[in-house]
Amino acid sequence: MTIPIDKLSDPAVRTLLTALNANDRAAFQAALTPDATMSDDGSDRDLDQWTEREIFSSHGRIEVQSEKDGGRAVIADYRNDTWGEMRTAWRFTVADGKVSRIETGQA
Image (cartoon, rainbow, N blue to C red):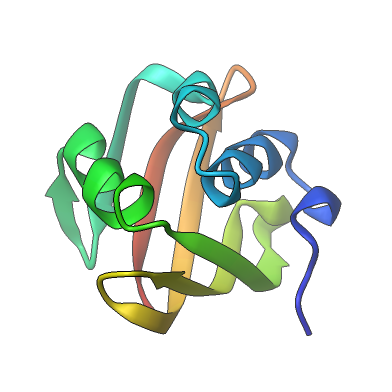
């Protein structure tokens, strides 16, 4: 069962994923702390390069299937034009109302 993005528990995660699904680069960046970092499948990545490739230029979309840890950990079906659809796990660290770290990988 999909959880609508606007029903996610954590407001910072809700804002970030709303921007992701809208393909709104400016709103996505605004939802992050200035020093935000990320990892994909356990390897640190350049956040700007990764989001451009995996989200914005490839039309990424996320459908959250479940959440835990107050909405800061989700299991989701993620799809983009490059890889198609896959089941993914996402963990978000939040600081001062913005996302400071994203950890993602296959679930």
